Length: 214
Image (tube, rainbow, N blue to C red; front, side, top):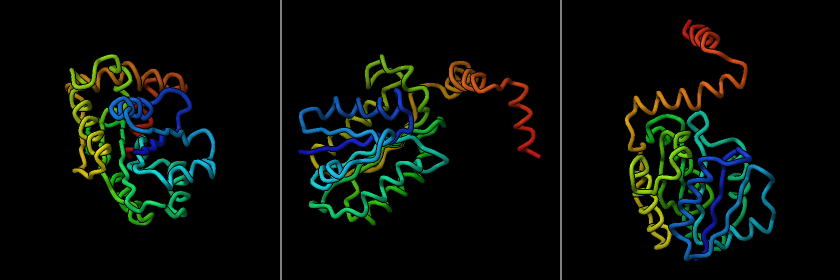
């Protein structure tokens, strides 16, 4: 079985989408797996040809404004123009977002389903994951355990459907972690340091929030 995984993260370094791709690759490594990063260079005609003869396409990407990242959308448009040799090629997605609730990904899932119809491909399944920024921080915890319990179960279900060429019900999950604790840790370890690196402090951020509430 020929499976192509497309990492749609705009990040050049490590990303949550890359981590999810690694989890999935480990679960289906007995098959032929080809991986592309679409953030570095346009896909070549040879890569498009590989896609056209694939059994499954797996898109791993982050949610951007409740939607598909613009650079990945351009890739989808290019793929849609190609005529697939196998119209039964199945499309699967792993989408992560910065909100706690995995359900936040449902609009992007519906967009991918509509694209599937336009490209004359077959919808397989989506996994929508919340608290994306937290996941690389707990990557040393085995899947199926602790905060990675839900993710492990979802990857197991997704990998089974991919390797058996079946469709499944879309899965939306949050990490096995209290929401209040996720919010506190995310603020201290991620959002505040990122704001500081971009020249913001708490007072400036509150000023901007008050301005938007006017």
